[in-house]
Image (cartoon, rainbow, N blue to C red; front, side, top):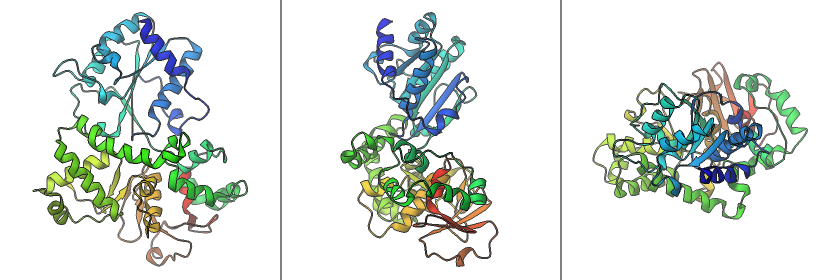
Length: 405
């Protein structure tokens, strides 16, 4: 057992607690079972280690961290480990990368083991993380009635400014932003030159690991895309190597013309897919992994059965890593807006304008000279404009929407 504590403490003590993500303060850490999902590289592990370090500073060894792809768990069951840790007085068990856990029995996976721990050891609080693709996963242990699920998105523009020591600002509600944007932007732009920071964010700001090695950032992003398609998605769904290659081709087709208005018949022919349901399932794989984001005009019920009307890349940094930054400035603007609002708001495509949020607010996205022609007869309609520091009336700077979380 000492090996476990040494392993855990070595990792926890190295955690940098200087900058905490927005989600850190939103999680109810007293909940007995917490699920943290998010795309690769957004900082789930760091978030867990920061909380474990905080807990152990109050009472040593009350929190233990385990990465479930570690060789220590090739033969050891997490249920057996939890039993021993409970005897030693551990009260918080942080389990990372659960989708990589090697099952010990054919019909007894990580979710069944976590359910077992939850039921057998009521004094243990379990916090586990996994890739966004776990949303595709049909767990053998039903955790739905027990767990509280949180999604960690990539850095907001606001967080990017804090991480890069450009300024510390509070998160805004959408209503506050729309009602008071002139006053808010005036206060921010008096402190920093916002536009250069915003341009940098669009290129390299979504993932916090950029600061580790800026020169290899895009290579790492492309590696993430490969791992998601070749490893993460197959780990939670029964797909073949041939299918993973089709997913790569599908991503290439979407990325080359994003925002992509899908022609399902042509896509099926290009990818040699015989039926539409299979193609929609592949699109759902990429969306669940947060590689792409699909929107429709109508509110969606069973998303996998519906054809998306428009598909965006998951974040603006992918345009630069995939070298797709030709004449796509309008697309990058829309991709940014989509990535920032879809964290806490429901977006769909309106008949007029580019987005409608929460079935209430309509937004038209454009450059500084964009007119309100398309939305001038609509209520609660706003122009969201790039390359301006401050707005007026219903004309709002695009960058400000990066302050929503």
